[in-house]
Image (cartoon, rainbow, N blue to C red; front, side, top):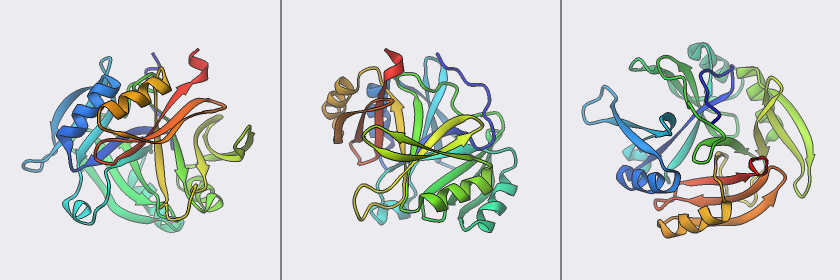
Length: 261
């Protein structure tokens, strides 16, 4: 099992879901990925943060969506967190490089310190300075996070932003059936792809990918659990991918990695 105990600067370290239907989401993702949940107080009365574990290791989080977002019709969203050593300094770099600070850095109990921003095209990204919580303790395992795709109409601007803000590198590769694909790198490792919106009207966002053992069987299970498949399973160089929504409309992707076979 790929267990993690630390993350490099800029590396994706955590994902969490903001949703209006916490109970429904817990039921859906528990059945889908085999997650167990722990309820944590946030320090605000009646407010809780839920941590999902997979085989005893932290895998993902969940929290209530802000009511104003619900009122505006904003769908549940999977959020990506990038690891940083000094989040306050990172947020200053966000502003200096064309991004927007949505939530200035604040302490999350003893877990760590969090800042929320948008890169120049508008995709929201969280920056996490680890305390007691380093992020996901398991990745690249069925039921765990494995990859993120930044959907943006401005790949060049995204590369420049993340290079300046968290020191990410950049690479481009020809992918069979996909053409030339831009990648964000941490050290020698590709950690995310940058892709153009497939159709007009799609807002910039991160597509969060979870590993599964069988993409087709999991797609069928998603439908049985009340979710939907918005892109049916298809083959890409790393494996077999599908894009889904949970019963409340939160979008995510599942991938059966070829290297697992």
